Amino acid sequence: MAQDYLPPNAINDLSVDTGKTTAAFSWHAPGDQCNNNAAAEYDLRYSTSTITECNFTSATRITTTTPLSPGGVECQALDTVGSLSCNTTYYFAVKSKDSSGNWSAPTFSSDTSGAAGNASTTTS
Image (cartoon, rainbow, N blue to C red; front, top):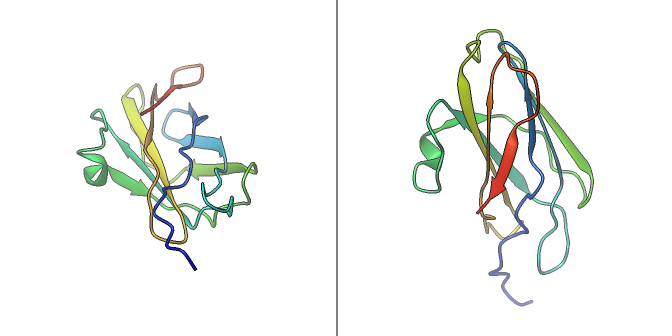
């Protein structure tokens, strides 16, 4: 069996909706580039500072559920009391990992807690 060196496809539609002190996330589950299998794991993070690929691991990690099959709609929540402060801009990022341990490129987003509307998303 050939070694899989390709990362899974990046998540390209991260949506973040924040409440006063909570956040809800959704995106479509990506597939592996080699076999289109489901991702093995997600790494979802948030911070009050801009998240980049260089400081990704210093942002606070959010526990995620087991990834769905490619194309499935993933839904995660950050609803622990006191997790977010009201009227504060937060930055979010997510990566996916395949069964061979390859990580996708991160997807970045930001939103202000307690503000109406959806967050913007950029992939790099």
